[in-house]
Length: 279
Ligand SMILES: Cc1cc2nc3c(=O)[nH]c(=O)nc-3n(C[C@H](O)[C@H](O)[C@H](O)COP(=O)(O)OP(=O)(O)OC[C@H]3O[C@@H](n4cnc5c(N)ncnc54)[C@H](O)[C@@H]3O)c2cc1C
Ligand code: FES
Image 1 (cartoon, protein in one colour):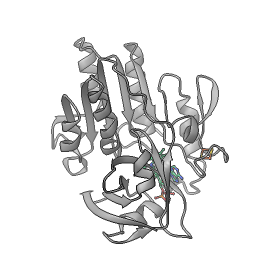
Image 2: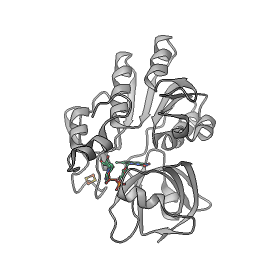
Image 3: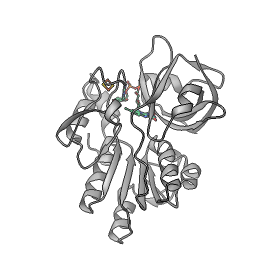
Image 4: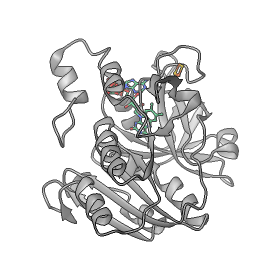
């Protein structure tokens, strides 16, 4: 069993859980993820490693409640445990001195991009972060990401905090102004990563996206996380989760994520982007 050492509510439906998992903490690197089961009868779900503490032997995850398992996680308190916690899985993010980088995030990505931004900054990059949420209430992690960045722009769709709009507008503005950006790292919904990749492609900026297809085993055996990148089949759990956003077959990824919901309204809630309305 893996004990919860700390719980912090970032919004009413997004929670940070610090889990005692010394073997995972020992090896965790930016961009990697864990697969956990809340209880013996539960589903295996992948969650990105949002932080780690070698001394405490702990891993922090940030859980956005969207369905059964994330709902169960959202009800756990400090002192409760999860049954299984496997990791670190996936390839770590490629950290190097690219000179100027943009870190673009939405949803749980606002927390999980922090270790990537921090490592990029430690590697000598100037890090410009851009985050978005529908309203002020949905924004979180600004302090953590600010500390890991040289500049941070926050936007909300309703204008209740920061600039009105979403990540695309400030990103395009920076690029139109000729601000030097050599590489972009993007974590968020499939639709957002697709649209950000389209913008950066216009400017010839290599863009790394963190893909979130349905995963089951996380070891490259089941094929559930199959994606197409540059015309080649890849398994996001072992070949990723990070890939070149300009090479991803986004329509295939979106279609495969819609495979399992049986009711149309379920699809509508889970998959339609709250910003652009696309599937
Ligand atoms: C590499 C990776 C990292 C992720 N990191 C985070 C994170 O840090 N925080 C976070 O809140 N969420 C993260 N997710 C998404 C998270 O795994 C899903 O939201 C979760 O599995 C939903 O389970 P559920 O039972 O609550 O919802 P369900 O009702 O089963 O499904 C709701 C939504 O979750 C997606 N989903 C369901 N099962 C899976 C699965 N096994 N794998 C992937 N997606 C699934 C569905 O496509 C649907 O969009 C990540 C996904 C991947 C692939
Ligand atoms: S989750 Fe099974 S192959 Fe990737």
